[in-house]
Amino acid sequence: MFQSSVSRTGTALMLLGTWLLHACGGGGEATTPVAGAPPDATLEYQRGVAQKAYDGVPRTPAGFYADPPLAGATGTVATSHLKNSDISSTSGGASFELCTDDMANAIAWSEQRATFQGSYADMVDMSSDSRAFEIVRVPRTDSTARLRQRVFKCSYLDRTSTDLANLSGPAGFVQARPLAAVMLRELSEYLWQFTSFNNADHVVLTTAASTGTAAGQIGHSIEMVQLSRAATSGECDRLDIRRWTHTVNTDTGALSRNLETTQTFHARRENGRVSLCP
Image (cartoon, rainbow, N blue to C red; front, side, top):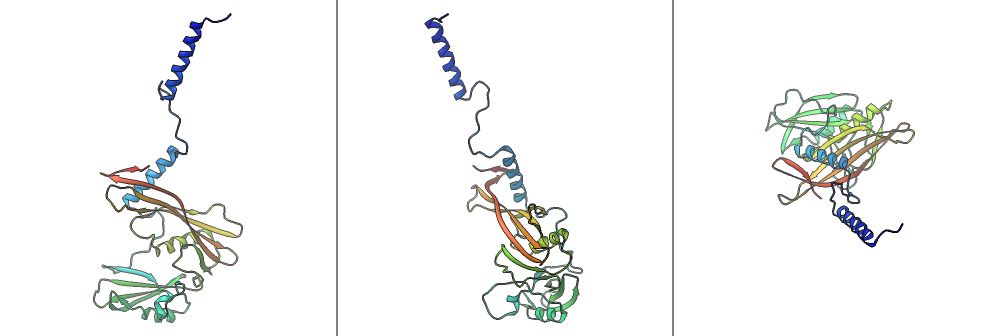
């Protein structure tokens, strides 16, 4: 049976009203998410990362490598690895940490860098382990300070093929055997101590064995966040999540590293509250 014209008109008006209601987001139904918007889990993760970056402490997770305190030190302790640029009068070229298996060489190189803040520092202690020699010096103008210098043992790590100016690329040769994941983790976390990442506004998020490493290789990744503060108060700060991965060839000991930025987002903290910026 055919509908009357009035019935058809009422039905059309009803459908139009329903369409308008949905288009305006009414009727108690959820609106369609904006295309390309990050999911809630990503936003929550970014908020958590931003909170850690603003808090600033702890800067490394539990169990991350840390140098033991220097016995007897009550003032400043400056720890460094002696580099080829420390003992060479020529400029230019790649900079890398020195290595030797001869204690006399380590002491001689230390003597060439025996000043601390303009003051000569006397050698007061000498020690070694399977990885490095350590020379401890005390500045004559500050008996509370300690200058702790290290030289890798070549039997542990030879860094002559690396360039410390780059955080990606060749990283030397691991000579110690056997090569294992736990050893690479310790080495990766140790080398992190001597990078620009070991400073304020940098926080390590995770440290773990790499996934998807090729056969015959072992990898370890350190994921961290860098907070770059805005020039003007109240503006959004930039946060970069980076992954620094060391990979070693288990046959040759060739070590390489790769730094990649996996996420970048912006946030601000006002009155102790962290919020993400669009």
